[in-house]
Length: 552
Image: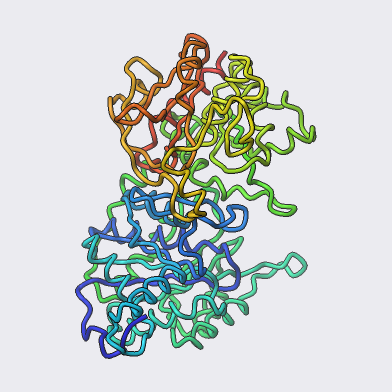
Protein backbone atom coordinates (compact mmCIF):
# COMPACT_ATOMS: atom_id res chain seq x y z
CA UNK A 1 0.00 0.00 0.00
CA UNK A 2 1.31 3.49 -0.65
CA UNK A 3 0.72 7.18 -0.43
CA UNK A 4 0.37 7.62 -4.18
CA UNK A 5 0.90 5.70 -7.38
CA UNK A 6 3.14 8.55 -8.55
CA UNK A 7 5.72 7.44 -5.96
CA UNK A 8 6.45 4.30 -7.94
CA UNK A 9 9.98 4.39 -9.24
CA UNK A 10 10.24 4.97 -12.99
CA UNK A 11 12.74 2.21 -13.26
CA UNK A 12 13.37 -0.80 -11.08
CA UNK A 13 16.96 -1.63 -10.37
CA UNK A 14 18.58 -4.37 -12.41
CA UNK A 15 16.65 -6.91 -10.36
CA UNK A 16 14.14 -9.16 -12.07
CA UNK A 17 10.90 -10.26 -10.38
CA UNK A 18 9.12 -13.59 -10.90
CA UNK A 19 5.61 -13.90 -9.44
CA UNK A 20 4.26 -17.42 -8.91
CA UNK A 21 0.48 -17.79 -8.55
CA UNK A 22 -1.82 -20.81 -8.32
CA UNK A 23 -4.93 -21.90 -10.15
CA UNK A 24 -7.80 -24.40 -9.76
CA UNK A 25 -6.92 -25.92 -6.34
CA UNK A 26 -4.92 -25.09 -3.24
CA UNK A 27 -1.88 -27.25 -2.56
CA UNK A 28 -1.11 -27.36 -6.28
CA UNK A 29 2.63 -27.05 -5.65
CA UNK A 30 3.36 -23.33 -5.96
CA UNK A 31 5.96 -23.44 -3.18
CA UNK A 32 7.94 -26.29 -4.71
CA UNK A 33 7.61 -24.71 -8.18
CA UNK A 34 8.88 -21.37 -6.85
CA UNK A 35 11.74 -23.13 -5.04
CA UNK A 36 12.67 -25.09 -8.16
CA UNK A 37 12.63 -21.96 -10.31
CA UNK A 38 14.88 -20.27 -7.76
CA UNK A 39 17.33 -23.17 -7.88
CA UNK A 40 17.46 -23.09 -11.70
CA UNK A 41 18.23 -19.36 -11.73
CA UNK A 42 20.75 -19.74 -8.90
CA UNK A 43 22.44 -22.52 -10.89
CA UNK A 44 22.87 -19.97 -13.70
CA UNK A 45 24.95 -17.75 -11.44
CA UNK A 46 22.20 -15.39 -10.29
CA UNK A 47 21.79 -14.31 -6.69
CA UNK A 48 18.25 -15.32 -5.81
CA UNK A 49 15.92 -14.59 -2.92
CA UNK A 50 12.35 -15.77 -2.36
CA UNK A 51 9.33 -14.12 -0.76
CA UNK A 52 6.13 -15.76 0.45
CA UNK A 53 2.92 -13.76 0.61
CA UNK A 54 0.16 -15.26 2.76
CA UNK A 55 -3.21 -13.58 2.12
CA UNK A 56 -4.43 -14.18 5.69
CA UNK A 57 -5.13 -11.25 8.00
CA UNK A 58 -2.99 -12.96 10.66
CA UNK A 59 0.22 -11.06 11.42
CA UNK A 60 2.25 -14.26 11.06
CA UNK A 61 1.76 -18.02 10.95
CA UNK A 62 2.54 -18.51 14.64
CA UNK A 63 -1.07 -18.46 15.84
CA UNK A 64 -2.51 -20.55 12.99
CA UNK A 65 -3.79 -24.07 13.62
CA UNK A 66 -1.20 -26.46 12.12
CA UNK A 67 -3.87 -28.96 11.03
CA UNK A 68 -5.38 -26.24 8.86
CA UNK A 69 -2.34 -24.27 7.72
CA UNK A 70 0.48 -26.80 7.99
CA UNK A 71 3.84 -26.45 9.69
CA UNK A 72 4.97 -23.19 11.27
CA UNK A 73 8.53 -22.62 10.04
CA UNK A 74 10.86 -20.48 12.18
CA UNK A 75 13.68 -18.33 10.80
CA UNK A 76 16.95 -17.36 12.47
CA UNK A 77 15.50 -13.95 13.36
CA UNK A 78 12.52 -15.61 15.08
CA UNK A 79 9.86 -14.95 12.47
CA UNK A 80 7.10 -17.58 12.49
CA UNK A 81 6.14 -18.15 8.89
CA UNK A 82 4.65 -20.44 6.28
CA UNK A 83 6.19 -23.85 5.56
CA UNK A 84 7.04 -22.73 2.01
CA UNK A 85 9.77 -20.57 3.53
CA UNK A 86 11.34 -23.87 4.58
CA UNK A 87 11.21 -25.09 0.98
CA UNK A 88 12.94 -21.92 -0.20
CA UNK A 89 15.73 -22.31 2.36
CA UNK A 90 16.20 -26.00 1.58
CA UNK A 91 16.29 -25.65 -2.22
CA UNK A 92 18.40 -22.47 -2.27
CA UNK A 93 20.63 -23.34 0.68
CA UNK A 94 20.19 -19.87 2.21
CA UNK A 95 18.92 -18.35 5.46
CA UNK A 96 15.99 -16.00 4.92
CA UNK A 97 14.68 -13.24 7.22
CA UNK A 98 11.31 -11.80 8.21
CA UNK A 99 11.43 -9.32 5.31
CA UNK A 100 10.93 -12.31 3.00
CA UNK A 101 7.55 -13.13 4.52
CA UNK A 102 4.41 -11.01 4.52
CA UNK A 103 0.74 -11.47 5.29
CA UNK A 104 -2.22 -9.19 4.68
CA UNK A 105 -2.30 -8.56 8.43
CA UNK A 106 1.38 -7.64 8.54
CA UNK A 107 0.97 -5.21 5.64
CA UNK A 108 -2.13 -3.60 7.17
CA UNK A 109 -0.45 -3.35 10.58
CA UNK A 110 2.50 -1.45 9.10
CA UNK A 111 0.32 0.79 6.92
CA UNK A 112 -1.90 1.76 9.87
CA UNK A 113 1.18 2.48 11.99
CA UNK A 114 2.62 4.74 9.30
CA UNK A 115 -0.70 6.43 8.61
CA UNK A 116 -1.29 7.17 12.31
CA UNK A 117 2.24 8.64 12.49
CA UNK A 118 1.50 10.91 9.49
CA UNK A 119 4.27 9.23 7.51
CA UNK A 120 2.11 9.36 4.37
CA UNK A 121 1.76 13.16 4.83
CA UNK A 122 -1.99 13.20 4.29
CA UNK A 123 -2.02 11.34 0.99
CA UNK A 124 -4.34 8.49 0.08
CA UNK A 125 -2.93 5.06 0.97
CA UNK A 126 -2.81 2.55 -1.88
CA UNK A 127 -1.15 -0.81 -2.58
CA UNK A 128 2.50 0.13 -2.88
CA UNK A 129 3.48 -0.85 0.68
CA UNK A 130 3.53 -4.36 -0.82
CA UNK A 131 5.92 -3.20 -3.54
CA UNK A 132 8.08 -1.48 -0.94
CA UNK A 133 8.38 -4.75 1.02
CA UNK A 134 9.32 -6.72 -2.09
CA UNK A 135 12.03 -4.20 -2.95
CA UNK A 136 13.25 -4.13 0.64
CA UNK A 137 13.78 -7.90 0.64
CA UNK A 138 15.65 -7.54 -2.64
CA UNK A 139 17.82 -4.76 -1.22
CA UNK A 140 18.65 -6.57 2.04
CA UNK A 141 19.68 -9.78 0.28
CA UNK A 142 21.42 -8.03 -2.63
CA UNK A 143 19.62 -10.32 -5.05
CA UNK A 144 19.30 -9.81 -8.78
CA UNK A 145 16.30 -12.16 -9.05
CA UNK A 146 13.45 -12.13 -6.54
CA UNK A 147 10.79 -14.83 -6.66
CA UNK A 148 7.47 -13.97 -5.04
CA UNK A 149 4.90 -16.67 -4.33
CA UNK A 150 1.39 -15.26 -3.86
CA UNK A 151 -0.54 -17.63 -1.63
CA UNK A 152 -4.02 -18.90 -2.28
CA UNK A 153 -5.69 -19.46 -5.65
CA UNK A 154 -6.54 -16.91 -8.33
CA UNK A 155 -10.15 -15.86 -7.96
CA UNK A 156 -10.05 -15.60 -4.17
CA UNK A 157 -10.71 -12.12 -2.84
CA UNK A 158 -7.92 -12.40 -0.26
CA UNK A 159 -5.02 -12.13 -2.72
CA UNK A 160 -6.37 -9.41 -5.02
CA UNK A 161 -4.34 -6.76 -3.16
CA UNK A 162 -1.10 -8.55 -3.99
CA UNK A 163 -2.03 -9.28 -7.60
CA UNK A 164 -2.68 -5.55 -8.05
CA UNK A 165 0.75 -4.69 -6.67
CA UNK A 166 2.31 -7.25 -9.02
CA UNK A 167 0.34 -5.84 -11.96
CA UNK A 168 1.66 -2.35 -11.21
CA UNK A 169 5.23 -3.63 -11.15
CA UNK A 170 4.72 -5.35 -14.49
CA UNK A 171 3.12 -2.24 -16.04
CA UNK A 172 6.01 -0.01 -15.03
CA UNK A 173 8.76 -2.47 -15.97
CA UNK A 174 7.39 -5.09 -18.39
CA UNK A 175 10.81 -6.57 -19.23
CA UNK A 176 11.71 -7.06 -15.56
CA UNK A 177 8.62 -8.91 -14.31
CA UNK A 178 7.36 -12.41 -15.18
CA UNK A 179 4.22 -14.25 -14.11
CA UNK A 180 4.14 -18.03 -13.67
CA UNK A 181 0.74 -19.68 -13.23
CA UNK A 182 0.85 -23.10 -11.57
CA UNK A 183 -2.46 -24.73 -12.44
CA UNK A 184 -4.00 -28.17 -12.07
CA UNK A 185 -5.24 -30.37 -14.92
CA UNK A 186 -7.49 -33.11 -13.49
CA UNK A 187 -8.02 -36.53 -15.03
CA UNK A 188 -11.53 -37.54 -13.86
CA UNK A 189 -11.58 -41.30 -13.28
CA UNK A 190 -14.92 -41.72 -15.02
CA UNK A 191 -13.58 -39.98 -18.15
CA UNK A 192 -9.94 -41.05 -18.25
CA UNK A 193 -9.02 -37.85 -20.06
CA UNK A 194 -6.96 -34.87 -18.89
CA UNK A 195 -9.12 -31.72 -18.87
CA UNK A 196 -7.73 -28.26 -19.65
CA UNK A 197 -10.89 -26.23 -18.99
CA UNK A 198 -10.18 -25.53 -15.28
CA UNK A 199 -6.76 -24.10 -16.24
CA UNK A 200 -8.31 -22.04 -19.01
CA UNK A 201 -10.70 -20.61 -16.44
CA UNK A 202 -7.85 -19.92 -13.97
CA UNK A 203 -5.93 -18.10 -16.70
CA UNK A 204 -8.91 -15.90 -17.56
CA UNK A 205 -9.56 -15.23 -13.88
CA UNK A 206 -5.96 -14.03 -13.63
CA UNK A 207 -6.58 -11.86 -16.71
CA UNK A 208 -9.51 -10.24 -14.87
CA UNK A 209 -6.98 -8.94 -12.32
CA UNK A 210 -5.07 -7.31 -15.18
CA UNK A 211 -2.39 -10.01 -15.27
CA UNK A 212 -1.37 -12.25 -18.16
CA UNK A 213 0.64 -15.36 -17.35
CA UNK A 214 3.97 -15.58 -19.19
CA UNK A 215 4.49 -19.24 -18.30
CA UNK A 216 1.97 -21.92 -17.29
CA UNK A 217 3.10 -24.92 -15.26
CA UNK A 218 0.62 -27.70 -15.95
CA UNK A 219 0.33 -29.82 -12.80
CA UNK A 220 -1.40 -33.15 -13.04
CA UNK A 221 -1.23 -36.84 -12.22
CA UNK A 222 0.40 -37.56 -15.62
CA UNK A 223 2.56 -35.71 -18.11
CA UNK A 224 0.98 -33.20 -20.46
CA UNK A 225 0.58 -34.41 -24.04
CA UNK A 226 1.13 -32.29 -27.15
CA UNK A 227 -2.59 -31.84 -27.89
CA UNK A 228 -3.35 -30.37 -24.48
CA UNK A 229 -0.21 -28.25 -24.52
CA UNK A 230 -1.43 -26.73 -27.79
CA UNK A 231 -4.89 -26.20 -26.30
CA UNK A 232 -3.54 -24.41 -23.21
CA UNK A 233 -1.28 -22.23 -25.37
CA UNK A 234 -4.17 -21.24 -27.65
CA UNK A 235 -6.82 -20.52 -25.04
CA UNK A 236 -4.54 -19.09 -22.34
CA UNK A 237 -2.65 -16.82 -24.74
CA UNK A 238 0.90 -18.11 -24.12
CA UNK A 239 3.48 -19.55 -26.53
CA UNK A 240 3.44 -23.35 -26.65
CA UNK A 241 7.06 -23.47 -25.45
CA UNK A 242 5.96 -21.58 -22.33
CA UNK A 243 3.66 -24.39 -21.21
CA UNK A 244 5.67 -26.63 -18.85
CA UNK A 245 4.53 -30.14 -17.96
CA UNK A 246 4.72 -30.98 -14.24
CA UNK A 247 3.36 -34.48 -13.56
CA UNK A 248 3.31 -36.04 -10.09
CA UNK A 249 6.73 -37.32 -9.04
CA UNK A 250 7.96 -39.56 -6.22
CA UNK A 251 10.41 -36.95 -4.96
CA UNK A 252 9.98 -33.17 -5.11
CA UNK A 253 13.74 -32.94 -5.57
CA UNK A 254 13.38 -34.31 -9.11
CA UNK A 255 11.30 -31.27 -10.09
CA UNK A 256 14.15 -28.79 -10.78
CA UNK A 257 15.76 -31.33 -13.11
CA UNK A 258 12.43 -31.97 -14.85
CA UNK A 259 11.93 -28.22 -15.27
CA UNK A 260 15.40 -27.89 -16.72
CA UNK A 261 14.65 -30.64 -19.26
CA UNK A 262 11.54 -28.69 -20.26
CA UNK A 263 13.73 -25.58 -20.67
CA UNK A 264 12.09 -23.62 -17.87
CA UNK A 265 15.33 -21.70 -17.18
CA UNK A 266 15.79 -20.79 -20.83
CA UNK A 267 12.16 -19.67 -21.08
CA UNK A 268 12.55 -17.37 -18.08
CA UNK A 269 15.75 -15.93 -19.55
CA UNK A 270 13.83 -15.14 -22.73
CA UNK A 271 10.81 -13.64 -20.93
CA UNK A 272 13.01 -11.48 -18.67
CA UNK A 273 15.50 -10.48 -21.39
CA UNK A 274 18.35 -12.12 -19.47
CA UNK A 275 21.55 -13.29 -21.17
CA UNK A 276 21.55 -17.02 -21.81
CA UNK A 277 23.60 -18.99 -19.27
CA UNK A 278 24.32 -22.66 -18.69
CA UNK A 279 22.95 -24.09 -15.46
CA UNK A 280 25.43 -25.86 -13.17
CA UNK A 281 23.29 -28.44 -11.40
CA UNK A 282 26.07 -30.96 -10.71
CA UNK A 283 25.72 -30.87 -6.89
CA UNK A 284 21.94 -31.14 -7.11
CA UNK A 285 22.21 -34.09 -9.51
CA UNK A 286 24.57 -35.86 -7.09
CA UNK A 287 22.05 -35.32 -4.29
CA UNK A 288 19.15 -36.58 -6.42
CA UNK A 289 21.13 -39.70 -7.37
CA UNK A 290 21.48 -40.47 -3.64
CA UNK A 291 17.70 -40.36 -3.27
CA UNK A 292 17.46 -43.31 -5.67
CA UNK A 293 19.93 -45.46 -3.71
CA UNK A 294 19.55 -47.43 -0.53
CA UNK A 295 18.46 -51.04 -0.96
CA UNK A 296 18.42 -51.41 2.83
CA UNK A 297 15.43 -49.63 4.35
CA UNK A 298 14.85 -48.44 7.86
CA UNK A 299 11.40 -47.76 9.30
CA UNK A 300 10.76 -44.64 11.36
CA UNK A 301 7.61 -43.85 13.35
CA UNK A 302 6.78 -40.17 13.72
CA UNK A 303 4.50 -40.08 16.76
CA UNK A 304 2.61 -36.79 16.76
CA UNK A 305 -0.68 -35.19 17.72
CA UNK A 306 -1.52 -33.05 14.67
CA UNK A 307 -2.01 -35.66 11.97
CA UNK A 308 -5.79 -35.83 11.91
CA UNK A 309 -7.64 -33.46 9.56
CA UNK A 310 -11.18 -34.82 9.32
CA UNK A 311 -10.89 -38.24 7.69
CA UNK A 312 -7.45 -37.47 6.27
CA UNK A 313 -3.86 -37.68 7.53
CA UNK A 314 -2.05 -34.33 7.28
CA UNK A 315 1.71 -34.98 7.25
CA UNK A 316 2.53 -31.40 6.12
CA UNK A 317 2.34 -30.38 9.77
CA UNK A 318 5.77 -31.98 10.24
CA UNK A 319 7.18 -31.45 6.74
CA UNK A 320 10.61 -30.16 7.89
CA UNK A 321 11.09 -33.23 10.10
CA UNK A 322 10.14 -35.62 7.32
CA UNK A 323 12.52 -33.92 4.91
CA UNK A 324 15.36 -33.81 7.48
CA UNK A 325 14.97 -37.57 8.00
CA UNK A 326 15.18 -38.13 4.25
CA UNK A 327 18.30 -35.97 3.82
CA UNK A 328 20.18 -37.89 6.50
CA UNK A 329 19.02 -41.27 5.21
CA UNK A 330 20.17 -40.38 1.69
CA UNK A 331 23.52 -39.23 3.09
CA UNK A 332 23.83 -42.50 5.02
CA UNK A 333 23.09 -44.57 1.91
CA UNK A 334 19.94 -46.12 3.33
CA UNK A 335 16.33 -46.05 2.21
CA UNK A 336 13.63 -44.86 4.59
CA UNK A 337 9.97 -45.62 5.27
CA UNK A 338 8.23 -43.06 7.46
CA UNK A 339 4.95 -43.86 9.21
CA UNK A 340 2.82 -41.09 10.72
CA UNK A 341 1.39 -42.38 14.01
CA UNK A 342 -1.35 -40.43 15.80
CA UNK A 343 -0.57 -40.46 19.54
CA UNK A 344 -4.30 -40.19 20.32
CA UNK A 345 -4.71 -43.71 18.92
CA UNK A 346 -2.44 -45.02 21.71
CA UNK A 347 -4.65 -43.30 24.29
CA UNK A 348 -7.86 -44.71 22.85
CA UNK A 349 -6.27 -48.18 22.49
CA UNK A 350 -7.08 -48.07 18.78
CA UNK A 351 -3.54 -49.31 18.20
CA UNK A 352 -1.29 -51.09 20.72
CA UNK A 353 2.07 -49.70 21.84
CA UNK A 354 3.65 -52.96 20.77
CA UNK A 355 3.22 -51.87 17.14
CA UNK A 356 6.33 -49.73 17.71
CA UNK A 357 8.38 -52.95 17.76
CA UNK A 358 8.41 -53.06 13.97
CA UNK A 359 10.14 -49.66 13.75
CA UNK A 360 13.86 -48.99 13.83
CA UNK A 361 13.38 -45.56 15.40
CA UNK A 362 10.80 -43.27 16.98
CA UNK A 363 10.71 -39.49 16.64
CA UNK A 364 8.39 -37.11 18.51
CA UNK A 365 7.96 -33.62 17.05
CA UNK A 366 7.07 -30.36 18.74
CA UNK A 367 3.58 -29.36 19.80
CA UNK A 368 1.46 -27.54 22.36
CA UNK A 369 -1.33 -28.39 24.79
CA UNK A 370 -2.56 -31.58 26.43
CA UNK A 371 -4.31 -33.56 23.67
CA UNK A 372 -2.47 -36.75 22.78
CA UNK A 373 0.23 -36.17 25.40
CA UNK A 374 -0.27 -39.32 27.46
CA UNK A 375 -0.10 -41.34 24.26
CA UNK A 376 3.23 -39.75 23.42
CA UNK A 377 4.64 -40.32 26.91
CA UNK A 378 3.70 -43.99 26.74
CA UNK A 379 5.40 -44.28 23.34
CA UNK A 380 8.56 -42.66 24.75
CA UNK A 381 8.59 -45.12 27.63
CA UNK A 382 8.19 -48.02 25.22
CA UNK A 383 11.10 -46.76 23.10
CA UNK A 384 13.32 -46.28 26.16
CA UNK A 385 12.59 -49.64 27.75
CA UNK A 386 12.84 -51.56 24.46
CA UNK A 387 16.04 -49.81 23.34
CA UNK A 388 14.44 -48.33 20.20
CA UNK A 389 16.34 -45.20 19.04
CA UNK A 390 14.38 -42.15 20.14
CA UNK A 391 14.67 -38.52 19.03
CA UNK A 392 12.52 -35.84 20.70
CA UNK A 393 12.15 -32.31 19.33
CA UNK A 394 11.08 -29.39 21.53
CA UNK A 395 7.90 -30.77 23.18
CA UNK A 396 9.32 -34.22 22.37
CA UNK A 397 12.30 -33.39 24.61
CA UNK A 398 10.11 -32.02 27.41
CA UNK A 399 7.86 -35.09 27.36
CA UNK A 400 10.96 -37.31 27.36
CA UNK A 401 12.07 -35.61 30.61
CA UNK A 402 8.57 -36.05 32.08
CA UNK A 403 8.57 -39.76 31.16
CA UNK A 404 11.97 -40.22 32.78
CA UNK A 405 10.90 -38.39 35.93
CA UNK A 406 7.76 -40.50 36.24
CA UNK A 407 9.18 -43.92 35.50
CA UNK A 408 12.81 -43.71 36.63
CA UNK A 409 12.72 -41.09 39.40
CA UNK A 410 9.33 -42.38 40.55
CA UNK A 411 7.60 -38.96 40.43
CA UNK A 412 4.29 -40.37 39.21
CA UNK A 413 2.58 -36.99 38.86
CA UNK A 414 5.52 -35.35 37.03
CA UNK A 415 4.19 -33.01 34.39
CA UNK A 416 4.51 -29.68 32.63
CA UNK A 417 2.78 -26.54 33.83
CA UNK A 418 1.35 -26.23 30.32
CA UNK A 419 -0.77 -29.37 30.87
CA UNK A 420 -1.29 -29.60 34.65
CA UNK A 421 -0.30 -26.49 36.64
CA UNK A 422 -1.51 -28.23 39.82
CA UNK A 423 1.05 -31.03 39.64
CA UNK A 424 3.34 -31.24 42.68
CA UNK A 425 6.28 -32.09 40.40
CA UNK A 426 6.47 -29.63 37.55
CA UNK A 427 9.66 -30.92 35.96
CA UNK A 428 8.85 -28.69 32.97
CA UNK A 429 7.96 -25.13 33.94
CA UNK A 430 7.39 -21.82 32.25
CA UNK A 431 10.41 -19.64 31.59
CA UNK A 432 10.63 -16.62 33.90
CA UNK A 433 10.43 -14.04 31.12
CA UNK A 434 7.30 -15.71 29.73
CA UNK A 435 5.13 -15.40 32.86
CA UNK A 436 4.24 -11.73 32.39
CA UNK A 437 3.54 -12.31 28.69
CA UNK A 438 1.01 -15.03 29.44
CA UNK A 439 -0.63 -13.03 32.23
CA UNK A 440 -1.08 -10.06 29.90
CA UNK A 441 -2.22 -12.39 27.07
CA UNK A 442 0.71 -11.31 24.93
CA UNK A 443 0.75 -14.59 23.03
CA UNK A 444 1.54 -13.81 19.39
CA UNK A 445 5.22 -13.78 18.45
CA UNK A 446 6.27 -13.70 22.10
CA UNK A 447 7.83 -17.12 22.68
CA UNK A 448 11.57 -17.75 22.79
CA UNK A 449 11.95 -17.61 19.03
CA UNK A 450 14.79 -17.90 16.57
CA UNK A 451 18.49 -18.69 16.74
CA UNK A 452 20.21 -19.04 20.12
CA UNK A 453 23.64 -20.33 21.08
CA UNK A 454 24.14 -23.53 23.06
CA UNK A 455 27.30 -25.02 24.57
CA UNK A 456 27.82 -28.78 24.35
CA UNK A 457 29.27 -31.18 26.91
CA UNK A 458 32.27 -33.09 25.58
CA UNK A 459 32.03 -36.85 25.21
CA UNK A 460 28.25 -36.85 24.79
CA UNK A 461 26.17 -38.11 21.87
CA UNK A 462 25.36 -34.53 20.89
CA UNK A 463 28.98 -33.38 20.98
CA UNK A 464 30.12 -36.35 18.88
CA UNK A 465 27.38 -35.67 16.33
CA UNK A 466 28.06 -31.95 15.97
CA UNK A 467 31.87 -32.23 16.34
CA UNK A 468 31.70 -28.77 17.93
CA UNK A 469 31.72 -27.18 21.38
CA UNK A 470 29.18 -24.49 20.49
CA UNK A 471 26.17 -24.51 18.16
CA UNK A 472 23.40 -22.18 17.03
CA UNK A 473 19.89 -23.56 16.58
CA UNK A 474 16.34 -22.24 16.10
CA UNK A 475 13.83 -22.26 18.97
CA UNK A 476 10.08 -21.93 19.49
CA UNK A 477 8.97 -22.51 23.09
CA UNK A 478 7.76 -20.97 26.38
CA UNK A 479 8.54 -23.85 28.73
CA UNK A 480 11.85 -25.34 29.88
CA UNK A 481 13.31 -28.03 32.11
CA UNK A 482 12.82 -26.96 35.72
CA UNK A 483 16.31 -26.54 37.18
CA UNK A 484 15.01 -27.56 40.61
CA UNK A 485 14.86 -31.15 39.29
CA UNK A 486 18.00 -31.03 37.19
CA UNK A 487 20.38 -32.59 39.73
CA UNK A 488 17.99 -35.40 40.62
CA UNK A 489 17.46 -36.24 36.95
CA UNK A 490 21.21 -36.24 36.33
CA UNK A 491 21.82 -38.47 39.36
CA UNK A 492 19.27 -40.88 37.87
CA UNK A 493 21.31 -41.12 34.67
CA UNK A 494 19.87 -38.44 32.38
CA UNK A 495 22.58 -36.25 30.83
CA UNK A 496 21.97 -32.60 29.96
CA UNK A 497 24.52 -32.35 27.20
CA UNK A 498 23.65 -28.88 25.90
CA UNK A 499 22.85 -25.67 27.75
CA UNK A 500 22.54 -21.93 27.19
CA UNK A 501 25.72 -19.83 27.54
CA UNK A 502 24.74 -18.80 31.09
CA UNK A 503 24.00 -22.43 32.00
CA UNK A 504 20.40 -21.75 33.06
CA UNK A 505 18.51 -23.37 30.17
CA UNK A 506 18.74 -27.05 29.27
CA UNK A 507 19.02 -27.38 25.50
CA UNK A 508 19.70 -31.11 25.05
CA UNK A 509 18.90 -34.15 27.18
CA UNK A 510 20.20 -37.65 26.43
CA UNK A 511 21.10 -41.04 27.81
CA UNK A 512 24.66 -42.32 27.35
CA UNK A 513 25.10 -45.00 24.67
CA UNK A 514 26.13 -47.40 27.42
CA UNK A 515 22.48 -47.54 28.54
CA UNK A 516 20.60 -46.82 25.29
CA UNK A 517 21.60 -46.83 21.58
CA UNK A 518 20.10 -43.35 21.02
CA UNK A 519 17.79 -41.55 23.43
CA UNK A 520 18.09 -37.81 22.87
CA UNK A 521 15.88 -34.74 22.89
CA UNK A 522 16.47 -31.11 21.92
CA UNK A 523 14.67 -28.06 23.23
CA UNK A 524 15.20 -26.48 19.81
CA UNK A 525 14.12 -27.47 16.29
CA UNK A 526 17.11 -28.92 14.39
CA UNK A 527 14.84 -29.81 11.47
CA UNK A 528 14.68 -26.13 10.45
CA UNK A 529 18.37 -26.14 9.54
CA UNK A 530 18.52 -29.43 7.64
CA UNK A 531 19.27 -29.01 3.93
CA UNK A 532 19.43 -31.44 0.97
CA UNK A 533 23.12 -30.65 0.44
CA UNK A 534 23.85 -30.29 4.18
CA UNK A 535 21.96 -32.86 6.32
CA UNK A 536 21.65 -32.05 10.02
CA UNK A 537 24.23 -33.92 12.17
CA UNK A 538 21.72 -34.97 14.86
CA UNK A 539 19.33 -36.44 12.30
CA UNK A 540 22.25 -38.27 10.72
CA UNK A 541 23.33 -39.64 14.12
CA UNK A 542 19.74 -40.78 14.73
CA UNK A 543 19.57 -42.51 11.33
CA UNK A 544 22.86 -44.30 11.99
CA UNK A 545 21.52 -45.51 15.35
CA UNK A 546 18.40 -46.79 13.56
CA UNK A 547 20.63 -48.65 11.10
CA UNK A 548 22.46 -50.18 14.05
CA UNK A 549 19.20 -51.42 15.60
CA UNK A 550 18.13 -52.98 12.32
CA UNK A 551 21.35 -55.00 12.14
CA UNK A 552 20.95 -56.36 15.68
